[in-house]
Length: 271
Image (tube, rainbow, N blue to C red; front, side, top):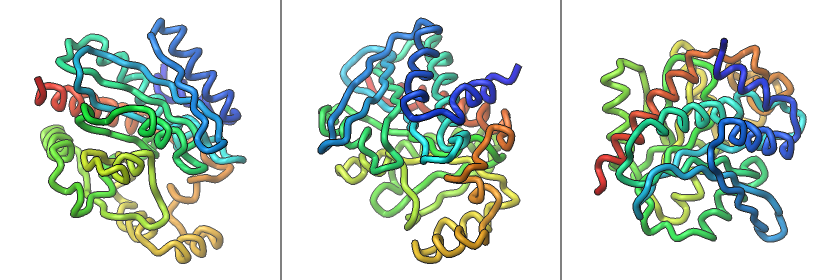
C-alpha cells in the first residue's frame, strides 16, 4: 500500500470544493476532530480546515493549501503536502505535547493567499511560535528551505529543521527570495512574523537548474515556462501534467518524518 500516493489520488483531478470536501471526509473517517473556519476576504468566500492538537496558550502551525490552479490535477501542488499533513496528524496523536500544534489546510492560496490572510486577520498571533508551510513535496530526494533572507535567517525554526536534516543525513539548501513564487508562509512574514518558512522537495541532481529557474526575474520565468525551457519538476508545476504518477512515496515519507521531528523539537522549546 502506498500511503501518500493513495491519498494524493483521492485529491487529484478534483475541483477545489471537491478537494476541500475530500480532506474533510478523510478527517471524519479517521475520527479526527477539526474545525471548518469560513471566511469572506473582501468578497472572496472560502474555508480553512483546522486540526488542533495539544493544549496550552502557545502554538505552532504546519500548513498546506488544498486548492489547485484551474486545469491542473494538483498532485504535487499541493496534494502531496496535504498527504504529509494527514500523516503528521497521525504521528502527533501519539505524542504528549507541551503546547498546541495547529495543522491547517488553507483555501485560495493560488488566487492570492486568501485563506492564510483571513486566518491572520481573524486570529491573534501573539502566541504563535512558528510556521512550517509546504509546497511541492511529492518528488525528489533533497529539501529546499525558502525564502531565507536577512529577515528570518536567524529564526530558531530554521535552526531546528537544519539540525534534524543534518542528523538524518538529508541533503538540503537554503534558498533566498524567489521573485515569481510564494506560499502561505509569506502571509505571516508580511504580518511581521519572522519564524515562518516554506519546505519543498526536489531532486538533488536537478537542484542547480531548478534554483536558476526559480530565482529568475518574473519576465524570464514566464518566457522560459512558455517555451518549455524549464526543469522537469517545473514543467509539471501548474500544468495539466501535475499528476500522481510522477510523484514518489519516499519524498513524502521523508518530509513527514522531518516535519514531525521539527514540530516536536519546537514544541519542547516552549513551556
